[in-house]
View (tube, rainbow over the protein chains, first blue to last red):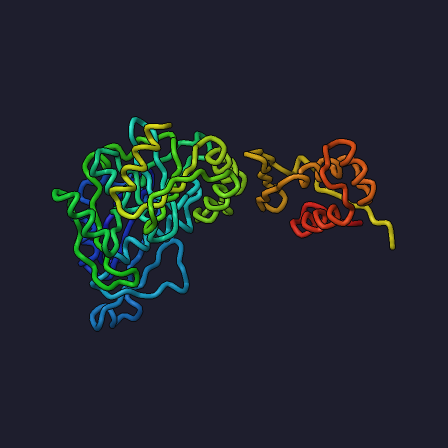
Length: 286
Length: 91
């Protein structure tokens, strides 16, 4: 394709090709400190292309594609090309990743141990991960926890943190020195702004961590903490995994190990301050 | 009513992992994961040894395990669930 960029996020290499210069320029800027894929060979190809040749110029709209495609994916306006690129990279992972069990979750690490936070969209996964990173935790990712079925270790996938709507202001206020991408207004998911993981998260992205705590955060309720039973954890994790079925018995091994060995808690929180308090309390009690 | 026997899949086609009071069962033949609660694992264990009728199974279950409600209708309901899950069949 006309414009391309290669980069590696954790263990996964991407090659992104685009009909337009702008999304690639934004990716190069925001991912400037990320390495190239191992051996310069990408695991996944991502393509941003025009629906029709003339739509490269006239009301340009970006279709996403690559090694794996979602037929019903709708095009985005070129102004949201960065979002299209991020969505396309996530899509390749969700549909094509076979080495690791993927759980739709954010992950932060402290003292070599990982805290996994998973939940529905809007539960606060990305926001809590960014806020914990602002308090000294290492950000391992805000989208996918990569579980190694052989070792049980969580591998980092610190892509750009996708902040939505009110979370944008909460996180930018907490991280005045943070690097942020452009504000993408009125996307299909509302307003979105990307936060670049800090230097420490990028430098340590090849260091996996042993999972220590599994959290199911729930935003918008009075503070509460409850235990989550093995059956509920298992069902919620299979629902949160994009490749559990495709992984076969290796996925079962990875998931049952998490369910049996890691304490799982659900926390309700009315604001991020309450969530930080709950996380610290639970972490100290491990 | 014809006397049909219940059969279960061979135990070596299942990976069973216990957590809390549940059994997670990965069925290698289908790639499907099942969550089993008592008495389903016990039923599979007995039927994997030898196929048998529901009334015979009830006697065996009661002998081997502390069965709270030895009710044939309830046992048949559990067997129907296992049939729907593809782990048990009638022949």
